[in-house]
Image (cartoon, rainbow, N blue to C red; front, side):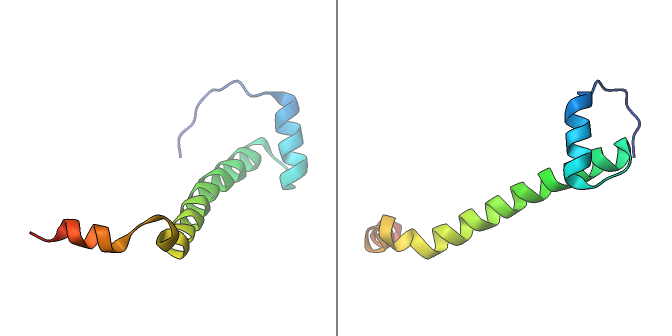
Length: 70
């Protein structure tokens, strides 16, 4: 872990602590970072699943296959 000096909005930090149920600034910031990282992974996973489920509605696989032939 690294130490750094940053300016943090006290009201937002208090709100985040309340929402996350954390007791310290450090725990609050680390938990918020973990949530932010997980959301992007989940978003990508959902988007890929949606594309896999719906690709047939948007892509003409016969045309794509034809373009792949030499």
